[in-house]
Image 1 (cartoon, rainbow, N blue to C red):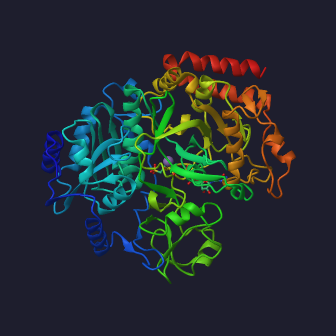
Image 2 (image 1 turned 180 degrees about the vertical axis):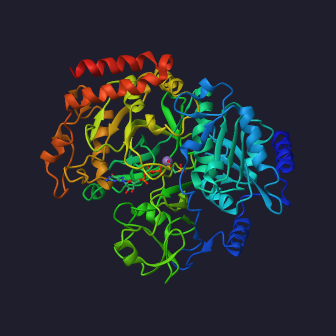
Image 3 (image 1 turned 135 degrees about the vertical axis):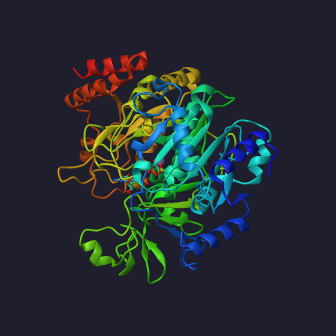
Length: 591
Ligand code: GTP
Ligand code: SPV
Ligand code: MN
């Protein structure tokens, strides 16, 4: 399929290492995919779902100890430990290669080695990059075929170039202590062993498009970010784009596909989805920042997705989708997860595979779907997929939005005074942890730019790169905002209705970008005047409640500043002076 020497040589090495019985190249054809689906069903790796209700949809369960990303077992293997920085686990590359190759040695014996050439971004786009993943898992092949653009065309575009990323996946032992997700940024190499969970094994996604790409982006002067990309069309037909970085399971897919509230739709407002998880951005010829979505599908959180919260996501999953670790309805061979609807199937199977009576099982406090169960759906299924989705040059970004889950302190929305102030805001994003990664849930931790688990180098250098991008973009830089959909009341209920109603906040953000609305200056930046957020048609939500969640409490922020100071200590000399100044200014303003 290719004459590219660097690929062919590496594959020879891989064959010698993992000793497969045969080698199959993924060519990008529908026939090949169909054949692989059939094989996976024969071995029980996948279950074919009801083809009338869910055409070309399949079901898969991972091992029960392998259901989320494992940050404690994820390593950046740079030559110098310092280059991985204080927020990453580091392993010496020589040691890591040896250990991983020892694990991989002979592991494909009696099995097939699948070679997946894939493009992150539209094939041939100036912003796209290419990778090759080898795996013996058909589940991985089928997921990669949804999440990325794969096959012959990718190799044709690559030609003899050496600019591609190696990825080796194998699973010989499901013991968590033997699981390693290792990245070698200086070698463009990823090795993932002993996991079968998406974020650990679909190597184009977090491993390449964020950890490796963030390092490439720093060296090449662009940005690889954990951000959705969303287009908002006004009644005049003008479309403005925003990117938003929220930590895992904090609302990117939902915001990326939201439906404008009633009233807006009638006036002609529309939302277009460009991406729901990752944004690659480069300065364009006109000096503005342009974004592409490197992915070709959605690897989305299933629980909570329903016709009310996110109809566009649900519709996206109705064909050609792989469901992982959700519950099953055994009566009609479909899928179910918490809050899909109010009727859990009686004759059901929970995510670990046990047959249960759904309603009884749930009444006893159990869940049919794992909280981090996921769907892998083709982007083209999304009813609001942007007409610009495949556009190689990307879309111009008007605003960057940061956010996290904060029950208190952080207002619904505010705008930073400047680019540097915005970098400061991004660098101190706090959020309650979620089921997307193994470990405790609901603990507030700092997750800079939602990149804590995904930055492939020293976080202090990453902050500096952000500052430099701002210098390069100058007055063409996107404006930077922060949002918090997750303020709770005394009973722990979310105050802001969220979901489609977030459109009201994005509307204010765009008005700010266009200079069409003024704001109130506070110690943290510009907060809306309550009357400037349109609440029309919003039932049971008063302007007084809105005022409550727009308040900037100086005492709380003085405490926040102390926490930030503590958090910043780990970066030492690498903390950019601009951020030190921002922190000093916040402390001063909160006095
Ligand atoms: P990853 O795929 O892990 O990166 O997650 P994500 O950021 O795309 O999060 P997603 O949109 O899948 O949302 C995760 C959870 O947050 C779901 O359970 C949603 O129901 C919930 N959620 C999303 N948006 C809102 C919102 O505006 N308000 C509230 N209260 N919950 C929300
Ligand atoms: C996330 O955890 O941010 C995800 C899912 O988008 S995973 O692919 O597992 O990283
Ligand atoms: Mn994500």
